[in-house]
Image (cartoon, rainbow, N blue to C red; front, side, top):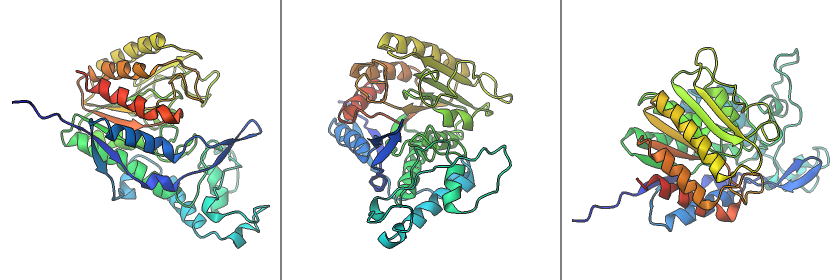
Length: 363
């Protein structure tokens, strides 16, 4: 009798399509916004065609009270409020806002522009316009009328993925969009609004300790901040060296955790042009730290922007490199939740995701 092949749950939602900024600025240049809906769609379409996945459509959002267990209620409520406010905009109301005459409200996104230093004296602002910069650390978190809906469902996908792991599923893939690992407890930025991986890890604490493995090209500064003083969650990351890459101010090897949780933070910054050999060597060292921590479950912040063709990265990973990375992670033989982060070589994302899932199933 042939054993029935077990499929990997792929949790997804169509609500992410309501968040679709068009432009961003970079060094005085106006560029196309790279974190587009097609990223999630091409992964979903490709993976469903492989025969490896079980579709799980997420249709009911999680209550905000569950998000508050990980993230600041003020930031969460603000994101909901500003999205709802933008949904009421009309062409006429926009015409009074600087030079936005004839702007289509459906495609209007509000970008933060003033970032108050919280340790300085300033007037506490209660207007939605004023609060945007208060809850952002950079300008790369524009908000439109559909942003709250998209981010709420993205967080829900991670939360429900963790629930499947708690119920005994050995591997699940939460296809989150927008991504989340740059968002901290009370700050948005870097295309991220709610930290999906952190929300999942908080729920997985019901099993015991949790290790987060972040392989996105950019350091997961938000996830690191959230668990900096938590001895029950190990955060590990391989990423581009912050000396020359975003987010610049975090991701150094000497960042080992806060006073309440020493040695629960492991950063492996790599310099530009890092190859598969260099990356896999860092992965071996990272996994040694994970084994020493002895977690009950794993969350993988799964970014694909270390791929050699990614327009935002400089690393030289091949498609098959993701198979090898996944092989090393699955050798831990621990319940594992994959949470989608970055990756901007859009037409290759489905292939990269298939390589990773195949590697996770190889043992």
